[in-house]
Image (cartoon, rainbow, N blue to C red; front, side, top):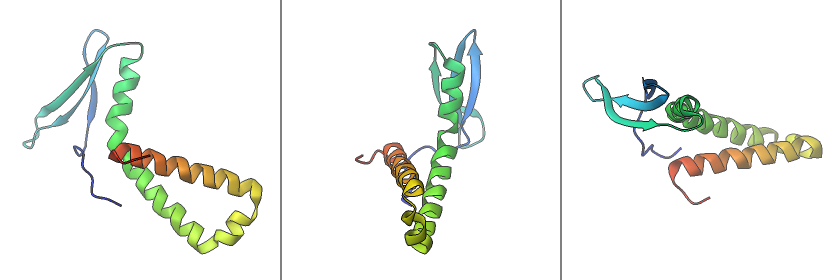
Length: 108
């Protein structure tokens, strides 16, 4: 796992006014609002909740990648010997790796 180069959570999704939703994270001293991103549009609440979950989702993807790599090393021939299962495994592993690279700003 590479070192995170993003603002660490917790991030918080909240309604600002009307239909406007945003994402913020706390200042060093605990006050919310260190950085705020506000949005409007078709799905502002859903967008804000998804963005606020991003650090947790990245951490979960990184953990899942470690598990998938370990399982593939331990059971690779058995796991990948079943072509119906192997195709799904390989596709899921590639999608997971691509999502992690995208989140880190690395080449896809």
